[in-house]
Image (cartoon, rainbow, N blue to C red):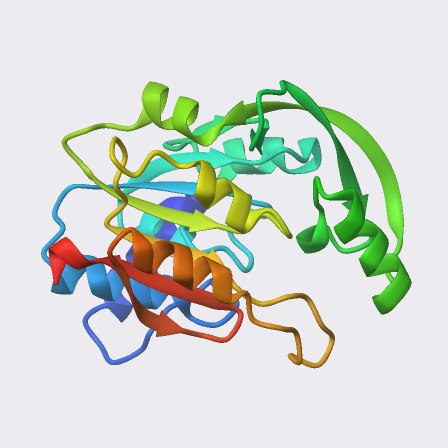
Length: 232
């Protein structure tokens, strides 16, 4: 039996019980699915910025199993084949998200792929403060977040963003044209990496989104989930 069909059957059975299925680091996907159902968002499209592994510790795979579809943006070529194989119904953009008018950038592959980053200072910090290693540096293409939405966002659907860009989450959100593309829900990493969960919270992300009329709905310490005030 096809694995995806099998997982769909498992999920459908679990959804009729009190058992909660989750693939995220801290249950963020279950919260997102709860909001979709509670707010009656029947038509949804997600954009997974920094997909990494298409299932493990992923915030959108549960939505995929629930037959929602979206766009996976992932610069690390090591994951492209797996994303295409595990999520054939999603669009894959094999690139990073630019925050300036540039088309390529150095991408630092770390010894743990969840720490991969375009930020040289972030990569050096991982080495210096946390004993991590830079495995290699590669050049990858970039595309702006607004350009991604212009070409792939289906305007009749509610937009959900999952954002994990290791040190560049705030600049990416700052570059988003909220007047043209207004996500219903934004799930974004808001804590600096640490081995013992002592990382500093990025308060500037919450401040920015409050200014665009979003409210913090949930916080798992690692990620924060913001909701468009127009939906409340």
